[in-house]
Every structure is written in structure tokens, then in C-alpha cells.
Amino acid sequence: MAGALCVSAQPPMGQMPPMGQMPEGMEMPKILTPEEKTAEMAEKYGLSEEQQTALLALNQKYDGKLEIRMAPQGEQRDFRKMSDEERQQFMNEMMSQMSDMQEKQAQVEKNQKAYEEELKNILDKKQLRKYRTDQRRAEAERQAAMQRGFGGGMPGGGMMPPGGGFPGGGFPGGGFPGGF
Image (cartoon, rainbow, N blue to C red; front, top):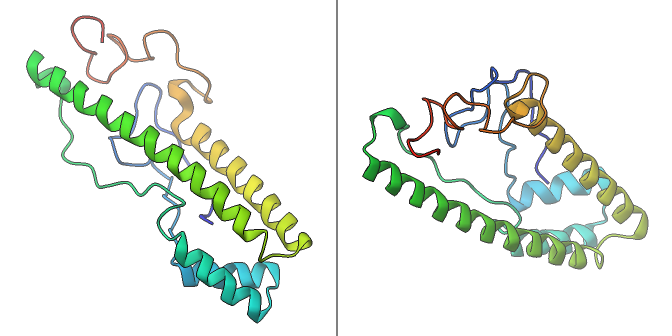
């Protein structure tokens, strides 16, 4: 139950934040402990003691399995100063990381479905309906914050033009030789 992202500014056109950093004004949502999550849900949905006990066990079971926790990123490197070999190695690392992230995202989605299935056995229909409404609202807010925060490289958001919106082919610093 991570809160919505806070957004107050977007990066200038064609300027993405460094890897692992949020755009100015955006914050990563706080990841709650199972106890914090249970207490928050107990208050929000008016849970009984029995429901709270069952929910705490469920939250402990799925702790760390309902979100992707990003590892801190290393030092930023200037593409213009990389050799062709360094660029290729960097791109290979990025492709591997993207593949890993896709696998992690698929597992998180599977875990979220399983969590909600078990949650059905704890919450009553009214509580479950409110929970689902809150989840949809939070997801819509996260999506809107991402659109506003990253802006897609165009003023006011939107899609990037062909070539990625950066001079030279899609990356800050003029792109890569060979069309990257």
C-alpha cells in the first residue's frame, strides 16, 4: 500500500533524471513494514481484532514481495567519454537489467494477485470494495505522477518524437555512434 508519488516539477524537455533518481519534486513512496501496513489498513477499513491478526500474518507473508525495491545506482557515466567497447558493455548491462526488471515485475504482479485472493478471506465485501477502489485510485495517481514527472521528453508530457527527443539519437550527450 504505497502512497502516491508527489510531483511538483518536471525536468526540462529532453532531460531525463540520472538512473536511479526521481525527477525533481518526485519522491519514492515509503515502503511500509507489515505492522505499519496492517495498522494503516485497520484504521482505514475499520478492521476487527481478528481481521487485524489475520492481516498481519498475510502482510508478513508477502513482505517485500509486492513491490520492486530498487538498488542504489552507481556513479553516472558520460557516454561521450566512453570507448565503443565501454558503450557496448554498458548497453549489454542495461539490457540485462531491463530483462531482470521485467521478470521481477511479472513476479510482483503474480504476488499481488495472490495477496488480493487471500485478502478476500479476511475483509468483508464492503471493506474489500473500498480497498480495491483505493488501489485503483492510487495506481491512477502513480500513473499521472509519472506522466507529469517525466513528461515523456515533450512539454506538457506526451510521447517522444522519433529519435527519442535528444539531439543525436535518443540519449543525453549526443547519442551513440551507429544510430544509438
